[in-house]
Image 1 (cartoon, rainbow, N blue to C red):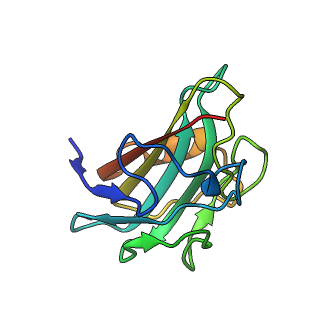
Image 2: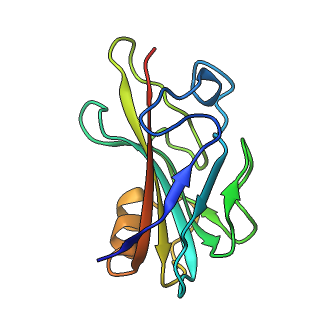
Length: 151
């Protein structure tokens, strides 16, 4: 059973509203994230941002993998650290695209960080499903931060 890490943002707290700056209603830049509790034996980190409330299927807003195990944060709107790789989001591009739900009900956005015992051999633009397959059996610890957004 994987252990847990702590994932936080200076921009919003657990279960709180994500400021418009980090959404399609604002600058659409990634929020600042920081973490702690990365276990010994971690070879790389991976981050996903998924909206499970999207119609049809969970919507992938961002995922990045092979983040160096020594990293402790990602600043606002920054590119992932050297050596990291971004997969293809459900907007059809690599990189962060913020919350942009249909007007009306709030959606939940799950920022999930994984500590892995390996570096992944996936290429840039990989699908989130191939990423999920690749991390099976390699997760040492995970941490999650959930924010909401309503237009």
